[in-house]
Length: 366
Ligand SMILES: [Zn+2]
Ligand SMILES: [Zn+2]
Image (cartoon, rainbow, N blue to C red; front, top):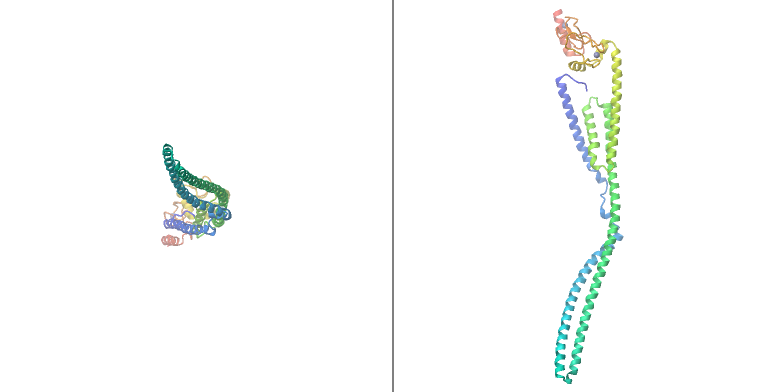
C-alpha cells in the first residue's frame, strides 16, 4: 500500500478500506450465526436428570402421601376432639345432677330409691367410660399425626441429601458440557485465526487486499470478541496466551522487517546515485520530498533553500539542471517544470503524459 499522490487513487483506497470493513462485518454476521447454532450440538443438561429416580421417587411419594394423611388425621382429630368435649360436658352435667339427686336422697332417705341409685351410678359410669374412649381416640390420632410428621421430616432430610449430591453431579456435567461447547468453538475459530495470520504475512499487499484485510478483521473479532461469552472460567488464559503468541509473532516480524529494511537501506546507499533513483517508486519519492525528507535515506533535508543539490546524509542527488534549458529542477521530477522536457531516464514512466510532453518538447526544436 504505497502512498499515492493521485487524488482518485486516494479515494479509491478509502473506498476499498470501506469494502474491507463491510466484508468483515458480513463475515462476522455469518460467523456469529454459525457460532450461535453451536450449542444445539450438545443436549441441554437438566438438573432433574441427575436425581436418582429409584431413590428420590419413594421419598417424594412418602412426602406427598404424608401430607394427605396429615390432612386426613387432622380432620378426624377435630371430630374426635369435638366428640370428646361433648362427652365431657355430658359427664359433667350428669355428675352435677347425680350430686343433686344424692343430696335430696340423703335428705329424704328413702330406701326404695336404692335401685335408682344403682342405675344412676351405672349411667354415670357409662358416660365416664364414653369420655375415656373419646379421649383415647384423640390421643391415638395425635400419635398418628406425630408419626406421620416424623416420617415426613426423615424423608425430607434424605431427599435434601440426595438433591445435594445430584446438584454436585449436575454442576460437573454442566461444566464439562460448557467446556465441550467452548472447544468446538475454539476448533472453529482458531484455524480462522491461523489463516488470517498466514494471509497477513503473505497476502496483505496482494491485489485483493480489501478482502484479505476484511477476513483478517473478521477472524480477529471472532476470536477475541465473539468467543468471550462462551469462555469457561480459565478461558481468559486461552485468550491472553493466544494474544501473547500473536503479539510476539507480529513483533518479531516487525523487528525482522526493520532489520531487513536497515540492511537494504545501507546496501542501497552504497549504490550509484542514478541506480538508486531508478529503484525508487515515483509516488513514494514525491511523498517523501513533500515531507522534506531525502527519498533515499529518509533523513530530513532542507529542500527549500535553493542551494542544497545533494543529500548531506547519503549523497543522493536531489536537484540538477535541465539538459534542455538548464533550469534547476528536482532529479525526481519526470519533466522539467520550466520547459516541459522529459528528464533523461524518466521517459516511459508516465506514458501518456510523457508522449504529450515529448511532442511539446519536440515541436519548438523542429
Ligand atoms: Zn539521503
Ligand atoms: Zn528545462
